[in-house]
Image 1 (cartoon, rainbow, N blue to C red):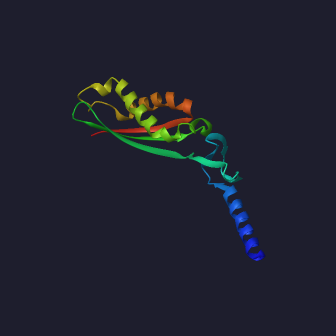
Image 2 (tube, one colour):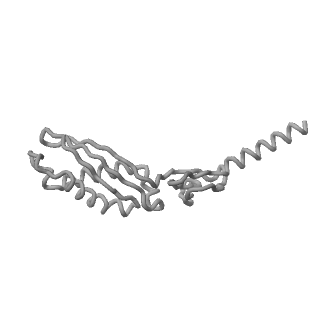
Length: 158
């Protein structure tokens, strides 16, 4: 009976230690939450957390991300685009990282609606590269405040 109790105690202790060790891969940052509130950010490497109190809330990739979108235009054309973005400041981005795709997609479409060239019926004269650069600048005005940055926008009128 004593051996069984010792084995249970040893396995419980090992499970507790295994739950306390968190490994963060290179190129990522993990945010730790305690009681639902952000506690700290874990950079890449091995870290100890308090089991049952701390949990990893977000796994933020610091490398590039890709977002593709398609928007029907007023004329019979569709606008397809690819937005390349990344997280620069995980402290700021942690609060909005779950909505990043919606923020970027909404920012791209809002910036596109503000473009005078995008309202014309004939889109054959529009320089997609130049328009993409202007969209990138417009989106970065909003996203920089949230710790993210658009690195490139590629557009294609179908």
